[in-house]
Image 1: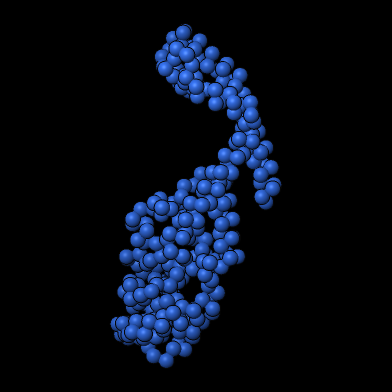
Image 2: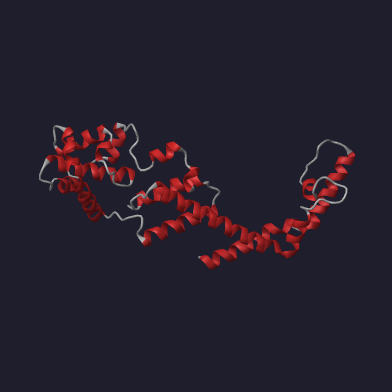
Length: 261
């Protein structure tokens, strides 16, 4: 499965509040400005005003709405209640009695603040292109690409999908980059070098090792015979022509970039 590159802890923590929220984080991420207070204040009852604010803070912090707003850390709820002038934060428990209210508030927040769904075709393609560029130009592994993707989505107000959807996209992009690199290398190597490399994988008569195994073995001791063996090894590697592949690979990569730009 694509999700295999994440640990159980990473999967469990995806799209959720951290277990502990510092005062600094509360002030940074859960502060309601005048516009926020005005929008939340349109609710007729206190628990709906508080629930709306919790939904708003949640999407800003974790990048998506939670099906159960009661799983939000209590310091977040208390901070929002204080800003709304609600003395008893436990009134939030009443918010969950009508499940449809949460969905209605989520839709309203999305429309008012400009959040879009992960399935939005424009944003999805932008994310794919972003990840493809990172996978092609950097050595970042799947976990780092996953983290970059999640940050990219939050910064652009795109609601986080389920963890499997995002890991699947990362896996597909990395596979595409690997295929692209393989095609570039094959094109850069050319048929002669490819045939020469394939010949190195055959076991020669009277030997237990392939020619490749002997060529890849470095010096084992300091001696004149060993020096001569390494000089012969260098000569065979140079005759193979593999030293020219780097320049050819760069030229081929430039051609691919020009075509896909």
